Length: 157
Length: 180
Image (cartoon, each protein chain N blue to C red):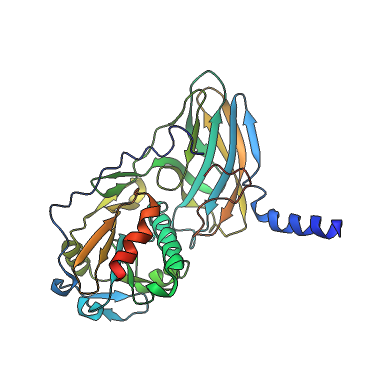
């Protein structure tokens, strides 16, 4: 019975396993990396993640690269006077002692020139470049187009 | 927990000195994702929820449609009379077929509308919505567009807007007031 319960838990938690993994580099913790399925490869994909800086030095996310897309960029959704626009963000500040989310409706990675359509259940690596801490690679789970975020026990939202 | 500095929204309420005209006074003709012509008169007597967007939009549009799908689930059968439409501001790429593939990812009550550029412009004018093509390197482009969700009473009067960054807890009560 114990084994049965364990197996059930593993099966149900499997799809969210990657997004719930945590990687660290220096004082930074990177977790809850996820993306949404795309219809075909022509439309841009999206990349969301949480970054926590537990150090005493400000840092900044200055770029992302991934084999999944030819032109990944950092963007920020800005709504001004009711109009949504999506300017390119040169960098995303990760201040000392704070957490930053790339999340729906705010900062996000925009994955242009996808090499292939992103399918729910797939995963792909994204390397984040930080101004001070250097580079770290995280596995990104592709959730459904409808998803609002990964279902992790400790998810931050 | 929401991290400090997250959601740097810079959100300001939409300028609403100019309100959308009542549905019955609108003059656009669009095509839905199943290829059927749709006119404002087809919506007479039913509450309406309209959102402007486009299927190439990676962040705002799927987020809004996910939210709308959750609201519809919460309202259940109460929302069955509600017209829920995404009007594409990118008719060049969003054909009825493309819209059909897109809306199939969300609540089945959501319809996609597109049409000739001048009809989309007419719809935006009637709703007092705006949109603008933004060209990028390499011939690609994106669209800036009004992000709010427009609500109309069953008699066609404009009811309210659910702003993009508005607290989502207020959306369902707002919707309930519109439905009755």
